Image (cartoon, rainbow, N blue to C red; front, side):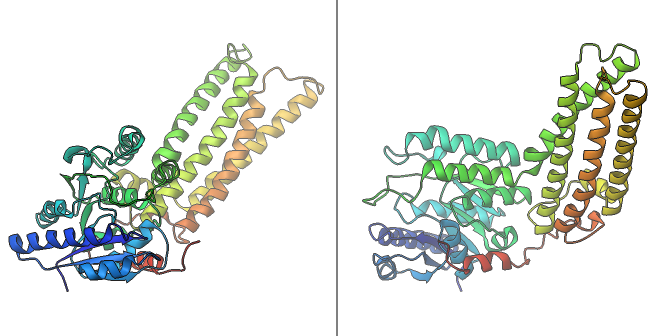
Length: 414
């Protein structure tokens, strides 16, 4: 058993892995001298065919084979196999100085759950980072992450970081690829874990080949992952804005129609657009609710007091009653429109489409509410009372990380 485990993911890194292991062992020597901590260096090998395993072992590392391919899968497997209560991760390309991890472990000892490195605070040496990553990719993605999740970090994608064993188990990380880096920060922020940040230097790597990172592909994977973990921004906010627009158009049109001006300045095309927008916004709202409850059920999200209170009044039965009520009201409105069209108008053109649009929108929203109630119940664990899913997850650090372990050692990805 060790106090500190430095985990290095590796895939064909023979040029640099030995150097990385030696520097990591120097970091452990510093921690032992300052704090009496024991340590280990663990190389999580992802199927190297260039002899990296032997080089790492000769340098003093313990090598663990991780069959599931991917940066995230290798790190999850390495963390699971490690014995330390403080876990450090860093790349095997020689770009990070593992001695920078010493203050990271010290931050964990002082109460932080996750400690990030900041290359922008510590320094980026010439040639260490492509300009598009330094001035576009990292700042943009870090800014989006901070906006969506309020993580408050300067460099969300630094590859050198440390976290406690209990934090790793609590986060239940699942990403296989480079999005693993974002997932760790996002879930820590969602669960109100204490995140610290220390300066880290970045140097040109020691390899004679291009890095495994593919900026555009991996950048998109990061961005889509940010959106998938933020149902409020992806679904709820657009739903609210769309619903406000639709309701404003329909209310103004209804007021004009009741005043006898046949819609006034708002024509039929705007009314039709508002009806469609209302239906789409309602569906987006249901998807946002579904995403929120999924995060609560999986344990990487905590309910706000307002959301928990709202869920006390919302259930499958409540959605079914509301849905069928709107459905019947919409059918009634369409029947009334047909009667007016056939009798009063003699099957001629009706000057204002507002009644027909309202009836159609009520039918669509009613059906969506009924079907949405069932899909929300399924995602909530087949619970009809959604409030059962919104029970705050205990903050005990003893929660097992079974899903992460299963993914780390699952079948190899293509």
